[in-house]
Image 1 (cartoon, protein in one colour):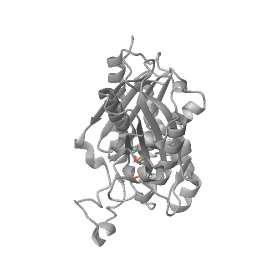
Image 2 (cartoon, helix red, strand yellow):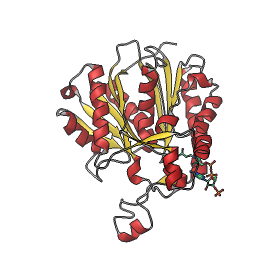
Image 3 (cartoon, rainbow, N blue to C red):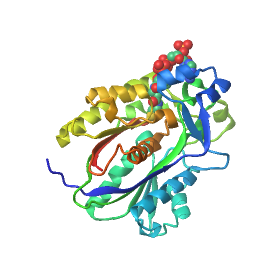
Length: 329
Ligand code: COA
């Protein structure tokens, strides 16, 4: 099968804050155990931002490394797209703060709110912009400081999430490699399952809103689990069918890192052996939109993702949003 490649990733990097939080740290603040967290989620460590550190700080660090790898200047960047649900402020877009910190004066900058699918939504938008010939150098990021919206007294959610950022430079394909296909989907009927109800037009800032803890992330864990397994499996099957690629031809599956059991179920559905599935959820927890670029960068640095490998990226997140991107790296 020959593919028409429009865009390719030419720079890839990530950044996490320095401060670590282990399962043992959670044992001290909520009624949980290392054994429960490890067995149910696969997680061991997450990174949490220092006081005063903001999402645009870690995004900028990741972006600077990706820009250097692509061999371009910040001034070359046409568009900055940031997937985040934990921006620096209510508005303006955190991508604008990143633009300023990078000195990317010639770019237009905006955020997208697609929760954990933010990076794949961003890659899809970048591929579409490049396909039309409108732009050439696009910075796509997923970056979160989920620690800022987590209730650290709620054991059902607090152990799951960490902070981090990943960045990719997307440029026109050299003709031999790049994004083959992407699929993005949403199902708003499931929007209430994973939500931060407060701080918007429905529940603006008030003492009552804070007292009801509506400014924190809320999740119906089991329902999210089931929806994730089904929707990630469906989108992965569809993208493989539409590109006529088989899981044997894939070198690597890089799924959203929310839970090792969800990842195993996805791998089983598309008959992907676990040795070809990249998992780092034990080292970072769920960093939402950042998990996929962090995992891709680590896979590349460990030699598990090589130039010209076929690689499948699959995500799901609040919304419900789902994404799949199939590329020849
Ligand atoms: N430590 C110890 N016990 C915990 C716990 C924790 N951190 N969190 C929940 N429990 C308890 C529950 O209170 C419940 O106890 P109960 O039966 O006495 O009420 C018990 O464990 C089972 O809870 P349940 O929710 O059924 O567990 P689970 O096997 O579904 O695992 C999740 C919970 C959250 C790990 C799992 O549902 C999950 O991964 N869901 C998807 C979440 C996700 O990926 N979200 C991000 C989407 S991008």
